[in-house]
Length: 149
Length: 119
Image 1 (spheres, chains in turn orange, purple):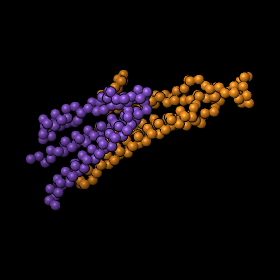
Image 2 (cartoon, each protein chain N blue to C red):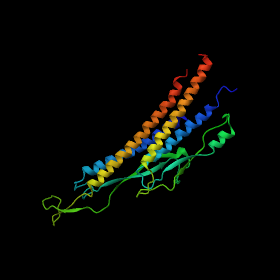
Image 3 (cartoon, rainbow over the protein chains, first blue to last red):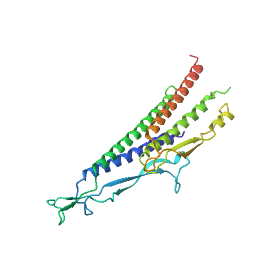
Image 4 (cartoon, one colour):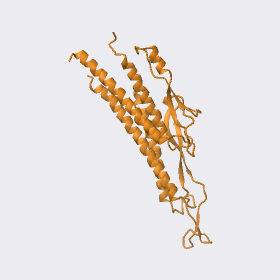
């Protein structure tokens, strides 16, 4: 076990933590914009969704790694808008209502966001646990040295 | 008689193997929400054969491993086959193994130390 590999398992867990945290941020942004009818691009806010992909180092064009050194955790390959239909509700008093009194609202639905939030939070916990356990293992290995010298 | 007890190399290999397995389990946990990701595991090729052919453990070298995708696991709707409970169980088990090997190695060293110092 080389010195560099002492840290590699922590790096893998760190990518997982970063990805899940990012996902939570995106969910929080979706919830915050659940009623935003105006965006810089025009039109109401569209729900954003993160896209995860397994990361493999030095494995260009390879779909499956065969060597342990190639495991690189997870990466976010993009944050994409959810292109499902935007709901329309009748609110004639709304400043963004059209001539029929219909307002187009963001396609953010609370149950979906909550489920995403909980999934991300559980994923975060699992990655954290892997990281903690690795630290314990490393400490145990280092304690072998403690008696020597 | 060699100064180095025969178990040293074997224990080193076992620690190394547990360390590598931890990496694969971490990879699976990191990808628990990646659509289409399939659970991966580690294969220790001919480690046993090596140990058997070299009982003194003088020329064991490094552990040879191969990562492979586990097939036949139940998949979620998004094609992901990571079972988080299974991974966390494996994680605990692997960490306990690692700690056991480290402990055995440490007590081996302590025995050697007391033999040298004569106390």
